[in-house]
Image (cartoon, rainbow, N blue to C red; front, side):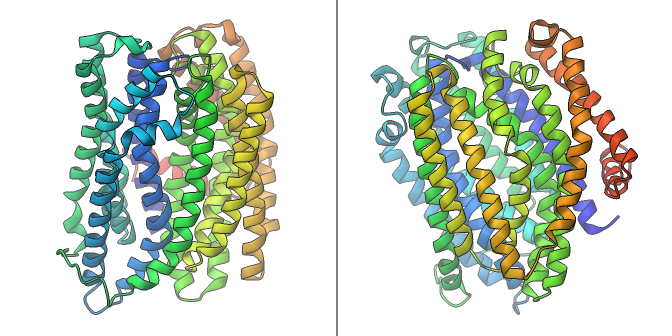
Length: 534
């Protein structure tokens, strides 16, 4: 099996286990604080979102866009990149410590910035949670720095498997909260300083342990990192120029997210709000993480090497192969998850009605799942050519559309459907973004052979139509919205799995009927993931 294939399987297997334990973590959390209509659940969701927003800047912004290609280049230095990495890690740690300390100092204002419409008691609870959650910034950042350095050295496993420990720690802590203080603590008055400390402290402890586990694998990089405050001489200035556009891009994204949160929080206590939207996004991200990240990450490292060597034709080949491979899996994931939206949402809600309401949010997110898989490849190709300026502009347009559609949703929709309207607006913005990004990259490289991989995507969609029909029929035969698959969290998971399997079988059969050339390598990847296969 090729290096790309082995890495994809390693990342994919780790991501599957990580996401499954992450889903269980969320199930336990929802049992403790509620979801749809829970004012306490929305308060915790907001507080725990703050450090994640900073982490998004570090991991999805500067590191992925800039650091991986630079570390790949630094391996050609006489010292194998040791000086570069030492300076980089010293600078990164200083920035993380200062950022974390500053965030703690301004925590009350951060919370109020994101939820200006929240009543005083809900703001107070969210602020109390924030003091416990904001230290995650430091450990998220260290985890991202170490993990991206490992990825750049083609050591993919630890970065993918370490979050499992975080999930196990969190699950244990949340279960203790339920055992000591009860379940479904949705009211603000249900919370005491002790329960706040236990829930928020557990969330942060999981990130600390996750980072410590990843650090244990650092020796495999062969790099010796020492504190080095002399930040000149190894190209950090060049990184600063590249990161400038990336930083602006991520800031634009955060501002758009801020606008979304402020609007969606208006529905807190009335229907699906910030907690329900986060849970719908978690379900949405399950196929994205397992499929897109596991296959796309190794391709990005290879693509960076080809771009650095000026081998544009090989880059075009990388783009086409990765999109076709991603597309085969992500199209059926979209179809299956769409028809199983209600039972899948039941896993993260405490009632049948709440599951139906949350499923609408999930469906609105799913509109953009396939386009985002394509965007993953297109955007990172720009990064491989050290171009962060162009992604800034097409992402800025996406952010503007996100804000505009959220404002329109707020002005036109009842609170019950506000989160769904905001999610649909985000999907629309992402579709526009990927169209423009593909057009720009096509111009830059003198062609991307778009027709070839669009033909493949069309073939996958054609096979997914009867597959979705089979899944929907299965859902109806199991009782539909009033059936047993929506009666309980565990049964929701079982029902979603049955619907997914039915859809997958029909999808595979139609791909075989269409003689899709991508089917054979896809089956090879699937066989490699099965336990005991090598």
